[in-house]
Length: 335
Image (cartoon, rainbow, N blue to C red):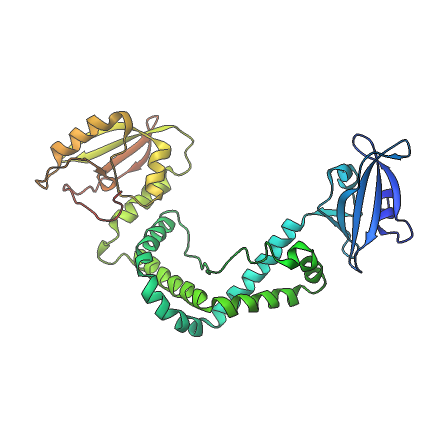
């Protein structure tokens, strides 16, 4: 064991001088409890104190970890095989993650009870939210992502707690992790049953809507599948512009399009665009002249289902030879 580790874990030595990155410093230890020792650091020169003591770190003597180490002792802890470095912030994230998993486990095990509690609240307050959720589900489908359960409850519930501020939370967690997890899980569940029930109802609706897209009965999500096919064809490019060819009334027009802007529109679930930069007038005139529904448009958007070809540097990325020769105005994707 090296000099630094020996000092940390020797109960008979409380003060020692070490050489740091830039000058000498003095370390002092104070036992906090049977788990933690607080380390203090003081700049040191010619036997005289050069500054007040600062916190040097918090030593977990059981797991041999130093938390929130001071910069002055980094040279003693880097690559030290006898003690690991960590941060209380990282430990807090792990604690929250464990609690979140436990809350999710409880919620799924008591799903019907919680949904019953949340159902009235959901009907009264969440219906306007459904439209936005459908758009996000479409975005997830386009990107090949599954629907995920997101439980609604305050995520900052430990950030400013007394336990966090005086470090007792970490001591308790390291000594008895499951006790801490169960304690805060119970607090969340007791306060947030309505919110948890509502989250489960939203998750249930999202799964049903996601399945509806996958089943695509009567081809009702045709434009979503077109957007997904485009996304799959162009998502991994590292380019500034692409060439897009659109087809209306058996006529074709090819123009340059900003790649990042177009990919963003596809990911966002849009099925049309009028955001084509320098080519705006050319594309706008072409679409207006060749729309076959007999309607005039002040803003001429080209529909993604009228894209016949996407290329980059003459390389074909996407092709659609089954374009229907009509113009349809879709509600979904309007901006």
